[in-house]
Image (cartoon, one colour):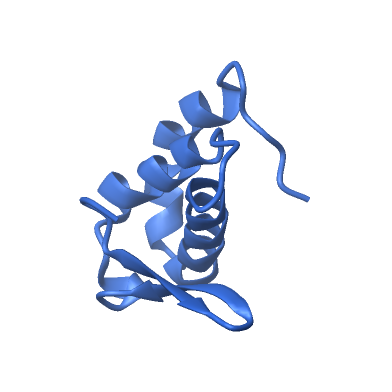
Length: 85
């Protein structure tokens, strides 16, 4: 997946996002805004990677998330951003 530290594993039960490193060790200032920006994607597997990557990072992020919130506002307010329910 290019510069992202993930790999999409295609299996008989659908795809699964595999991280190349522990999510807790990622640079949240760099990667979380990228995954948030990806939430604008409409096509899979890009949409799946963005949604699952965002969920994983938010779930594991703890204190790392608070520092990144200002950087997430622009992707969230973006013209074609989607709401995750």
